Length: 399
Image (cartoon, rainbow, N blue to C red):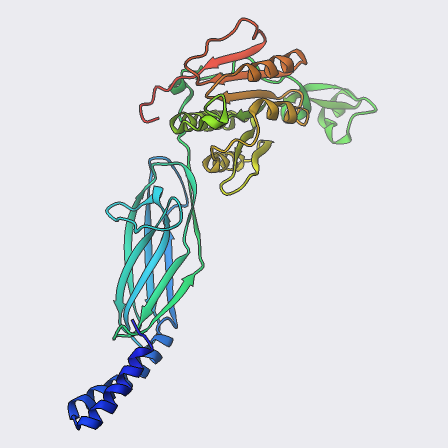
């Protein structure tokens, strides 16, 4: 690596060579004084017209799937690159197969180190396989590029700011894998409140009334009977589930986190959300965990939008174990803003007296509730009448 002392040394060497009349020393010092400016100019343009790119064949996958990663560095100029090093910031949980990440000062992060020498208008490629064994909302990048002159005296650095996202969804299992009824995991708790007439479900016709909309007039039946007739439809039924996900795995937050139990809770929530979406229910999500690097808790209102399940799975992918507020407090505060006919589904790895007390209070107020527990030490109580209680188990050995 270059140091200003090299110039001082070259001048001193030339002076000494002149004094002792040594041609070898004079030539050596002259070479140093020529090489140093050339090397300095080389490194100044080393990273000019150099680009770095990474391509993921998938950006949203489920736990257990494999992603192909391709990286490419290009030198789009006449001047060759004697050497270039790329340190790409990478989550440790996504370490490529057969490639060890270099250590980093950033927690849970390493560097994907790549080196190359490129001639004029040349590029280098690398291919990696990433096995996604852990759910998460991951960021890959930025990358630090370093290059220099052929003599190794000077070095130049550039940060490629591009960051790619890779979302690993939690594992989704069928209901029977959790020991839940495969057709109706929450029992007979569907809302039966008619909201609108469903134009796709005609039931018959009747005589016209002054408050009927003109668009519902059945003109052919009117012509046959000689008086106005209107179409009659079956009502639309609002099926709403709001999943309350408790990320606490111990009764007291200071006791820490049980990572295995937390992953089972999140996988169970994802499985129920997927079941609801497949059966055309409006599913919402409220959790007392937070987004990564944030203190904002997760809340997604119920919807039947085709992309709604993706939003819920992304939220469950990103959720952390940091408990913002006790789940019973969240249940009490959020319920008033939810539709009266919605079924409130508590999904938890632990069952506490505080959770049960709040659910009983809401049940007495007329709310529809379901409790799905992964707490193997808890036994259902007799005072939970009116609340659907399910104790989930994990038959899948991978969880």
